[in-house]
Image (cartoon, helix red, strand yellow):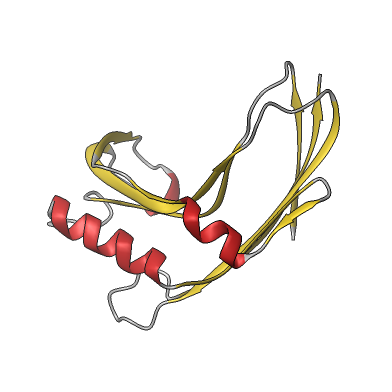
Length: 142
């Protein structure tokens, strides 16, 4: 499990990416916008577990399925020598798909956000056919 500590300056809502993927045409050269949508959908159709605990409230797989969102295409600019192995950056089109939770504003105090998710994609075109994450944030809201 990876732990992250965040201090919020003011009370705020949180956007929690319980599981998500982003596809772009720099990392998949020659892909059309339709190809990006198809790949993102295929990836998230392979999700086999979702879990979220916000303080003392738990959400299971069935609870989280209704929070899936698939975006329209959008513009992204990658830097040179950037993350995910992108050596030559520049502008690109991207799409995203995933399960996102937007919370109510947090009350002042300490909060814990813990989420886990995984997928198993058996299609040979899957970018990461077996993926799992387990993340916890400890947040101090003021």
